[in-house]
Picture 1 (tube, one colour):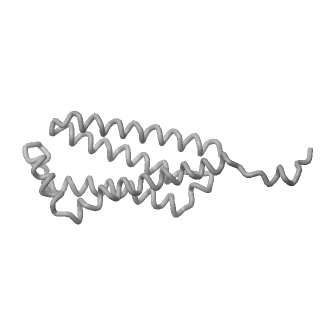
Picture 2 (cartoon, helix red, strand yellow):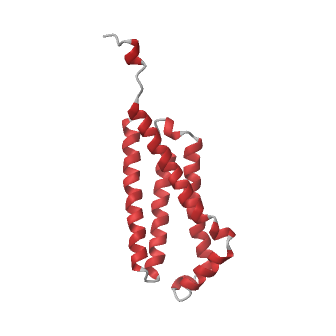
Picture 3 (spheres, helix red, strand yellow):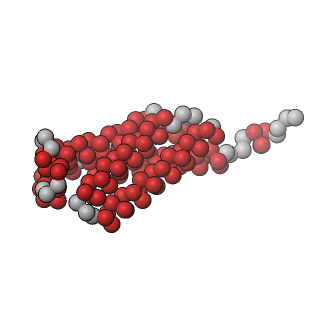
Length: 152
């Protein structure tokens, strides 16, 4: 059965929505993680804040001290954002495979675990609870991205 030329040129709204969703998730991950990761390396006030918050915890006794732990956290945040940049430049939103986007989301979940652990350790239970809500949102985004990838 032949399609009319008008039908063949019909705009695919579902594909457009999928592309916009994937691009939105990638941009969200980039600015979320880079805006929180970069200051840990370039703003001395962050080190003072972290040292004050965690001075009475076991983290202060670990090799490298609290500042080193802050740099590990900052590096994890920057890596999660950098993976999303790779996904953006590989134009995953326009292709079938969303491997780098899913990897960035998985790394984001790991980073949220680190943040939640630290907040729980200093007995900031409300902050820790909020972090795990964000981690849940990352899980939902991961499943959403995975379903988009399977439908392509």
